[in-house]
Length: 513
Image 1 (tube, rainbow, N blue to C red):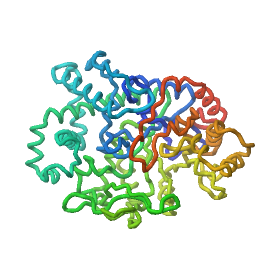
Image 2: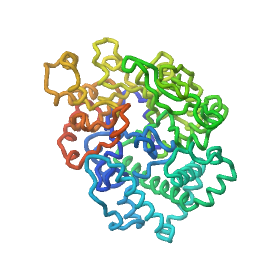
Image 3: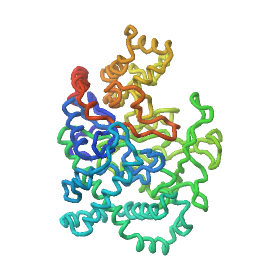
């Protein structure tokens, strides 16, 4: 967590700041994917120069199905793809020649090329370290493994087994491994010892690079917002190592899965398929797994955005095997007891509540009981209803306002897809005569920045006024998500000078007005 000593959540009276939402994978780099190396340091510098005090990213865990950062193989581990080859060259574990590669797309993450390329680099780094390179790192590596054994041992074995079984879901492994028979696990640890150690080593490297970046950010007055998915992936070390924390059958398969109910946007609802928690079992443990999950993320960020916050009040549980989410029902979440336990375990609640979607009074009451700032998205504000909570006139200061999120179209693309009548409604609300599509994203940014919300965040795509070709994610689309990247040329635009002027004008440069 931050060592700057400034309490920022809930936001104190008069607090005003702003920042940019950009996932690490979207940063420029010559290695096909953004990482924690030079481009991340340069990005922090650019934020600082533009008067921004916050950088928000998406979840940083190891991605599984669909390369989605919201379907990670672990809640605790980091994504090996984010390790900077340049950092490993500086550490003497790689040579520049090791990093020679076919040209990668500068605008798209080509996971099918990046994954084997990065795996080869990490194998090389591990081989050199195992052979005696950088012996001074050995004590730190061993301390890291010991300090994080609570999750690292199971995760490393999970990844080693996953490699042995060609990436198959753990439910397809031999039954004795699915059920975690002690003898089978011990044998696997012996047979896969080198692979297990390599996985641990990658996490060590990633942690070192993340710590360097965090120190640099804090030195520039930039704080980091992380993101924690509420649910975990079905095929994850979380479920495999802790089956007692989830509602599973004798075969270790979920008996109910997560989703959201039918609504205006979907007559069938959304069937996500994630396993759901056994809150009674988690409660009996004092919420330890959840506390440690948050602690692991807060080791590298200052604040955590809690995805799908409404599920702490109640979540939509769908019987496993149901064809749609229509058959689900609401099941109570842990409520206030959970946040009391987290506050006791961590000493504070540096959390932002993602309170979007179907929000009922109990969700609002839970958020406000603990003073958690909620989220407001301007793209949702223009339905013509005076009581729309996303209208800036309905905000309270303890709020984070966004033009859009990673799940939204870009603001320019959103506007271009509106009907003529809806477009006119946007301009009418803004109190301006109708303008061009290129004027909408800057107008919504201005609306966010001058609002009473303590914190205003813009996705980089909106700052750069990009169309839907730069969209990060289309919910429900199985392919081609999470691939967008920005280029060095994009980051050299005058947009950051304009952002500095807007931030100064709206009194968001100094934190407090």
